[in-house]
Length: 538
Image (tube, rainbow, N blue to C red; front, side, top):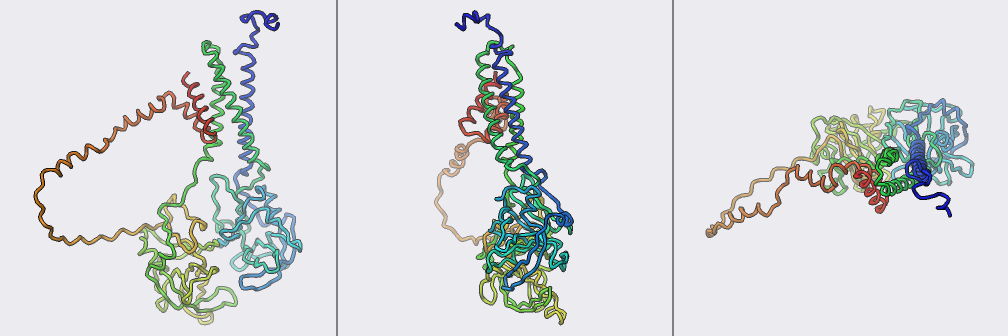
């Protein structure tokens, strides 16, 4: 009945033909929707990464936010209990106002001296910063203590200080307080973003870096959904286009070219989204040397009676016996200092950093003392809150403060895990504290492995004269090369590669399929490469 109404096949309306027909309109509509979804996916990813990934707050802007007040009880490592009244901005609300990521994002708070919280091995999330204790107190960025503005370093703990409450009366919470707060890291970081040096952040500012910047809530999940739908539609369009092209292979003049161009544009968009995610992060420098505790104890050791003077009142003075490996031995006997080496930075697991010149490392101090990397105190291994490794720098003028002694405890760093020798070669990345085993020390920078000592020549011993043999060794030498493979010219290797790929004309098709091979399952990858290969060779 329908065929009688429409007439013979040759007289049917052109609306069902390939050119200008419904199929073309459907393909174009689906292709438009696919590209639109891919663009939406890219946009969601960009906004979810928070733009530049950095928000700069001044003390004035922080004081202009909704504040919270309260008396915070604290206990330090020496079990000292204090009650202090602070005023500041709730940390969780502040991060929410700058567009921090989800509540599961991790947070790291860093002071101007490099001290950070939480310590290595522990995680503090954005969600935990909103937690209140029974008294209604929550973590804050404090700018006022006892009715007075916090003073900046070197004598104060401000102008901004991170203060956290106790959740149990026995909680030792004072170590979590970060004085002279400069940087708040919210991870994961966007690709390419580097953590700033807190020492370079101006006084009176707090930088929040990472997953911040007023991103769209759930932007990453939406980006994956939109990108997946767009990719599925794109594959559907490619498949339909290929089928129609095969059916109309005899009518090349009527084959539309728009889908091919649009397909290439879509592939470029996918490559721009996928390829940056597939670039591996720079790994730890291959020249980094990690010394285990056993290796450190096997080096020449030094033992001495050291005196210590604290920098702040009441200027405590004490003495102790330490044993360890001289830092000069570690750097100049177990390793070799480069000619331009000028200074070292010793880093602790809690982020504290001590800088010394090479002359300070090599110097001999009063009473014959040396700078050592200590692993024993009074014959016992160092405790966990001091070691396993501690830097010991002697006093230049031994004695108490009233006797002219100099404060050396700021340089006697606890929990040392790495030694950086400056200048660090370009492209070398510092190993993270979490990558260094406990009790070990990594050394990197302007150092290299020592050249192996020349081995003495062996003393020749007389050997009995063996009877003459036929020319078999020569024959073996002559036949040996014949069993080894011959090197192929570069041109032959190149031609074999091109042949395996199907010739130079197919390289564009494989190049277009490369971005999709990074995200598609194996069956779809094979189908995609076959489709593109077929389209390219038609």
